[in-house]
Image 1 (cartoon, rainbow, N blue to C red):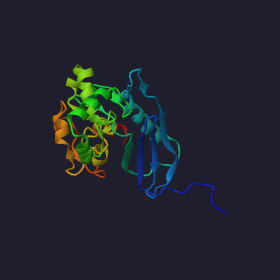
Image 2: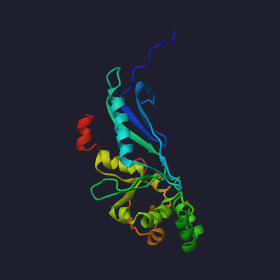
Image 3: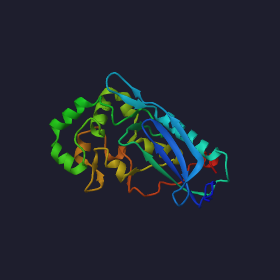
Image 4: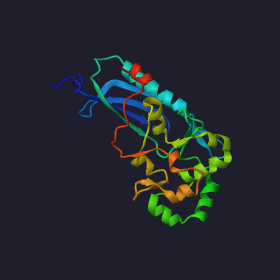
Length: 239
């Protein structure tokens, strides 16, 4: 008869973090890709929807949920944890948050579904050759993407906009808070509407039409480039 007990984990383990639009999950897998029973953390949440088309969340609350999920995964009862070799992170696409020079969010976290920049999207379509932009970036000049959102924010919330030293996705902000450094994967950049896919750089023509420069966006790295180790606060919390 087959054993009713789960197999012993084959070390080392990998933590998988999934930040979705309705929940955050942390799961643990062994090196063969088998989930370790009971080793998980989950937190449901809802983004705020405003009557004018806004869809946003608190970026620091998102970080706190993720930290709580990792705490729950590590504290779950069961056999001794195998050594953890890596953490892999997946997040929802082309989100946007402004971050000040101290590394703290100064705007809400805006969802791709936020439509408040629809006028700015139309303005950019008048100003730029949308076909050429689409050919370079793979994205139309649509309200879902960052160019329209950034232009809208510069007008709708100028004080907040000026306070932002950098603009980044939720995954980049999570890395900044947990690791003390961050970068933007080419995969994430390709969904921003600001990325020149052939040159593998931020698109110069689009940036010239916006009140930001490349220094306000994250450094670009390939998808599998490790970002680094935990900063001192969280290295002590999760030894």
